[in-house]
Each structure stands twice: as structure tokens, then as C-alpha cells.
Amino acid sequence: MAKVKYYYDSETLSYRKITVKKSDYVRRTIYLFLAVLLTAFLGFILLSQFIMSPSQRAQKREFENLKLNYELLTKRIDETSKILEQLQDRDNNIYRSYFETNPIPEEQRKAGFGGVNRYKQLEGFENSDMVIDLTKKMDILSKQLVVQSKSLDEIVGLAKEKEEMLASIPAILPVKKGDFWMASGYKMRMHPILKINKFHKGMDFSAPTGTPVYASGNGKVIRAQRSSTFGKVIYIDHGFGYRTIYAHLSKIKVRRGNQVKRGDLIGYVGSTGLSVSPHLHYEVHKNGRHLNPIYFYYGNLSPDEFATLKKSSEESQSLD
Image (cartoon, rainbow, N blue to C red; front, side, top):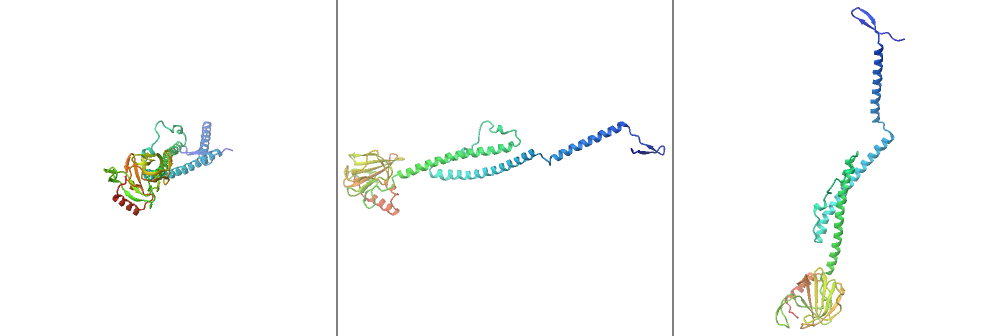
């Protein structure tokens, strides 16, 4: 049985029955239904933030894994960049300095990428900023690694060339220590036969006929024959602008075109050509200019031996 409700009427000083219209009842029912519906919708929205579907959970885990991998990869790129910077510093200031070549300019190492937007295809996604940033870092690092790799290839080539050059430069006495005495040095001398004051372009090693003569550096024999001035003579081209001459020989052991190495036997001391006694006349040339051979014996002379030889070469007399 429905409850009957009353209200107090102050004008009649009596209680009067509350009558509810059917339209009011319908309106209240609709309002209640809408309120319930709104509450359910809001509840679903709030609940969905805490309760996800299996696919949503999988997507969230995947995103978290991607984010973690991004952070780890970014850290590795930064560490690799630091190591590369150290290598670049050594390359410019040690390796290239040692091999006497120009360092790679910083703008060439750090050059960016010109032209159109290289990362346009990566735009418009949920995590585009993260992906573009990582891709840029990878591209920059890759380019710097290519530049450094080419530089190291060049350094290897320079090292091989340097090794070849060090083996080719005349660096030992052409006659063994103890087999000679110093007869003439690199300076103005009176020619013993022509009787004119003439610059002596080499050094004369006085020794008995038949004393072995050795190549002072790796090279190629470009001349091995008799001449009117030098008698039996050998010319060796060592490359890198260096040539040596071995004159007044009694016998030649090599031929034109032969490859020789430092210390190889090439002939024997004699007194052929314009010579007054058995000796080896030895010259060193660089790029067509004659040099004092005294500075090319660092391969087998101690400092004391060098000083003694230098002094005797200045005091001795010319034999050719």
C-alpha cells in the first residue's frame, strides 16, 4: 500500500494531503534514469583507467620496453661518442703529427646532413620525437665513424710508407768500421790530380783494394758502369728523393735494375778513374742536391764514433 504524505497548511491551520501529478512522476523517473546512466558512464571511464584489456596491457608493456631500450641505446651512443672523440684527438694530435700530415678539420668531422628533411617519414606517430632523436644520433655517429675509418686507413698507408722510407734512407757506412780510415770530408779541397780548388761533394774512405762496399739503404741500381771521372761507379735510387753514389771501385757486383737492401754487397774498393790511391768516394743526394754524408751514419755509429769520424773528415785530404 502506497504511503500517503501530508503537509501543514498555515492558512487553514490544518493538514492537507499531498497529491502527485502523473507528469511529475514521469519526470522524476526520467531524471533518476539519467542520473543512474551518467553515474554508470563516469564510473566506467574511471574504472577503465585502472582495468585494461589484455591487448592494452600488452601495448603498455611493449611501450615500456621500447622506452627502456631507447634509454639504453642512447647511453651506449653517448659512450661510443666519447670513445670516438678520444680517438679523433689521438688521430689529429699524435698519429697525423708523427706522419707529418694535416689533421682532419673539425667541421669535416662534425658536418651535418644538408638538403630535405631526412626524417619526414618518421613524423606523425605517437613517439615520433623519441624515434627521430635516436635516428639523428645514430646518423651522426655513423658519419663520424666513416670519416675516422677512412682516416685510419690513410694512417696505415702512411705507416707502411714511413717504414719503407726509413728502410730506404741511406743510414749506414758504405764500408765496415775498422776496414777504412777517413781520407777526405765534405768541403772545399784541392783536387790531387786536376790541381784546382774544388768542392768535394762526398766523403772518401781510404781502404785496401778489394775491401767490400755495401749499399747504405734499400733501393734500385740505376747505373753500374765505368765513367771517365768516377771509374767504376754505382748509382742507387732509394726513392723519396734519395740517391747515393759509390765511385772508384775495383769491381762491381750488381747490375742496372737490381733491387738491393741496406747492407747488401755491391762492389769492392779500388782506384779507378781520377784517383790517386785505393778508396771509396761516397755521395748522398736528396732531390738533386748533394748533402754531407756524415749525417747519414746514425744506423751504425755511436755518438763518440760519429764525433771522431766528423773531426777526421774535416782534417783529412782529398784522394780524388
